[in-house]
Length: 200
Ligand code: SF4
Image 1 (cartoon, protein in one colour):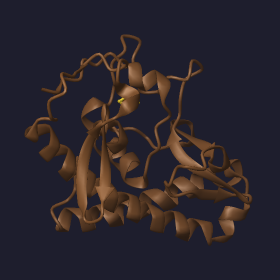
Image 2: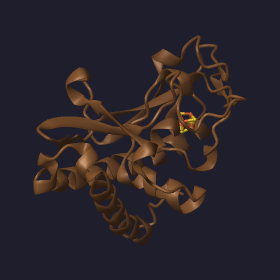
Image 3: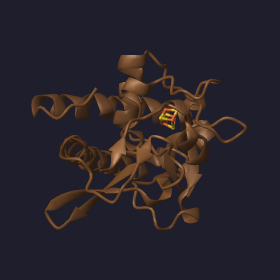
């Protein structure tokens, strides 16, 4: 059977950058008390990652993916010296799937092992049997919310991109940008709560 238990070793947190939505940031603010300021985030030039389909935000004619900031050694800013995630209960949804991925197949969602995690994630044990139903069930529900949140984030990004502010450099409008996406996050959170789809 495929067995997975996160051992909080942080291997994945040193290797990948973490794309976030406005709602990921709102969770950090509400539940972990983190002030959402420019030093929390990073922008990755989307032209360097053409295969990625995440929503993009524009600053001064360049489009970017919004992500968590990282330390000088490229590890996530929320990874502790001991290798643990300091925001584990409220971490961004993308972190919660690893070492699995969700695949959208027409109207269905399937859960598969993330090939990048093979031999890398110490909490993943594989003996060629299927992923347990309990893991699949939880991750399918998470994927349904994730897909919805990405659509909401896409609409927020579009709104930003069509505003006058998107013509400026990030540093000139950073506070404005964060204020804007956090206010939209509050509105979207209300919709998710009303439909029973809000995940802390
Ligand atoms: S938010 Fe937590 S789980 Fe996600 S990369 Fe950062 S330290 Fe790792």
